Length: 261
Image 1 (cartoon, rainbow, N blue to C red):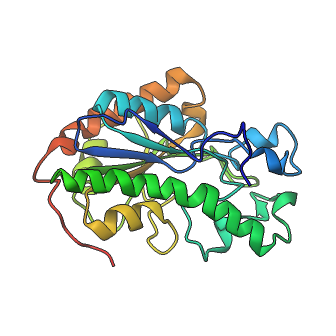
Image 2 (image 1 turned 30 degrees about the vertical axis):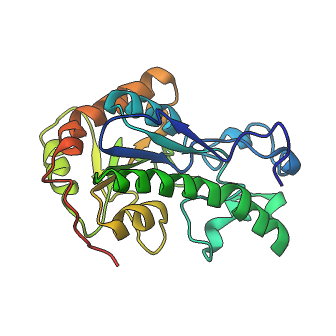
């Protein structure tokens, strides 16, 4: 499906980073392979939140720089295929997103679905696996960070108050100290699994790559209106760094504990 001139299905940032940490960004890009044209969507729609996590890639790059850690960023829009969903999940390739139809995903044939999996989804996750195996070969237990952003509101719903949301389940090694630190701050509104949580039967990346390995992990969301430009994205990445840098480096946090499945 991918043609000459299309970007790669993933990008590795700061591959030689020295910290015991791996950063990933499932919804880093709004790009669509040339073979799919505009997917039947208007120009503006292809840059809305349904296509990608606005500001997430900039935050991931900034965190990679601040932590001196490698990062793996997905190369294509989640409207092409959602790299944070299981292969049997109907939301892997959506026909409708936030009430908007995605014409190119209607009546999708098995061959086209398989090509999206083979050429976009698997290379991204294989790149993450390769990074984790390199840590294992070096006898390093890495801290796993998954960067996401959330729209200020979904169509027809109320404005979201939360500026930052911690998404977690079962494993509280990171959640407990981070929620305590967030609770001490009066300068931001945070959510504990609100409006989104970490769902091991729905989310794919953290459960499969981190939880099954027993790795300490952090999945978070920042509201997109706060990170829509580089200044805002850097501010929030720096805030995450300030809140978590010592946890990333802590040998007590980075012990292996199996919480799921």
